[in-house]
Amino acid sequence: MHPTLTIAVKAARRAGNLINRSARDLDLLTVTAKGPKDFVSEVDRAAEATIVKTLLDAYPDHAILAEEGTAKGANADAENLWIIDPLDGTTNFLHGFPQYCVSIALQHRGQITQGVIYDPVRNDLFTATRGRGAFLNDRRMRVSRRDHLRDCLIGTGFPFRDGSYLDTYLQMMKTMIEQTAGLRRPGAAALDLAYVAAGFYDGFFEVGLNAWDVAAGSLLVQEAGGLIGDMAGDGDFLHGGQVIAANAKVFSQMVSALAPFRDHLTRSRAPRVSRPAAG
Picture: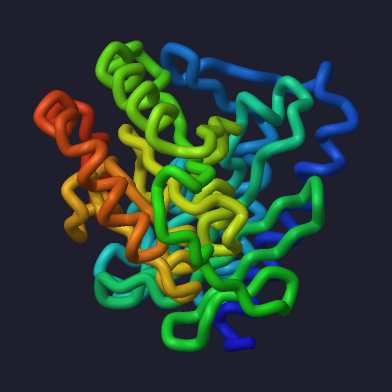
């Protein structure tokens, strides 16, 4: 395992241990609302602090882009940027629904080079280093080999926060339900992308995502032989808010199937989250 990836795995496991301990006492957690249907708990913040400390202890000159804002603005000119979601699937976690994860990625000069997604419930560790493949618990992962969308199990997520684009998204879901073997919406996008890389899903699509939802998973998919892009199939998925991921044949079929809805989603792009600014 690459030394930098080893540090990221250590950070993810530490956060996962904290999350698992907290899962035993959900009623005692302090929870606040960041916005409509968007919650943050003290566990999100504590897990993020643990991750950031582990990473900066090893790499004090690296920059941080994390969902809850820890170390925002530090080392703003650094070539290395860690992109972190300390608990993807917070709503699931707060309800005791066992589908959530820790996501950590390293971006070097604009390119994702390391990715870790850790599922603390199942103790599943998904890892990737650019050019070295993707792994689930040390076993090599490959995307599925299905050729036809009609035979595929597809994952998705709802643009849930303010209800915008819900009608359009329901039409997209109807299209995919009609054209696939099944559609699933478990509620943790990073883990969904890991599942595409592992071949559990044949594909995945969602809009309204942020960089920390996508960064690690995108490398997993690519290193497992899959494609990832925006709704047009292009490369602006990290900060563009829109994602389609699948093997090459299914990817093109998904892009075609969802093409009629692209114009309706232009305003659904997640706010661009650039690298931390000084100050």
